[in-house]
Image (cartoon, rainbow, N blue to C red):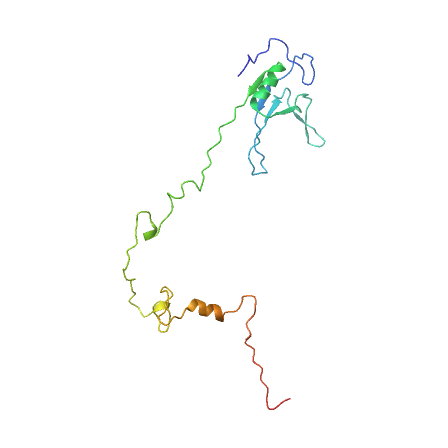
Length: 193
C-alpha cells in the first residue's frame, strides 16, 4: 500500500472539507456476485464504512433501522488503487479486503485431440490393409449387397453400364410432391351410373 494509513490530521467528514472525529474505518472491497444471477462477478470496487453503531429493529414494521450516518455511504471505483487513493486523500483509515485469485476454469475443448477415441484404422499411426477380404458371418443372414439380385454400390459400375444412382434419380419425384397413389380404392357394384 501507499502511504501510512494513519493520518496525522483528523479525517474529513464524507462529502465536506470539515474535519471529523468519529469517522469509522473505510472498507475497500470488490462486491460479491449476485445470488440471483449466474453472471460473472463485478469488476468494480466499493468503499464502505464499518458500522459505527449497531442497527436496531423497528418494532412496528420489523425493518432494520439505525442512526449511523455512515451506513448508507457506498462509493464505487473502477479499480482498487483509485479507491485507496481516494481514502488517503480524505485522510481516512482504511482496510483493503484483497480479492481472491480466480479459480482456473477447466476448458472441455482444450486438448481434445489427445483424448479422442479412435476406431481401429483411424488411430494415429495405423494403416489399412488393402485387399483383405471382409470377414463373413456363419449365419444365414447376409448383407444387403450379398442378397440375390442386389447391386453392390461399392463397385463403380456394373458390367452392363447400369448406374443405380442415376436410375433412382430419374424415377424419383421431388419431396414436396405427394405420390399419385394414396391407397384408396374406389369400387362400384353392378352397373351403377
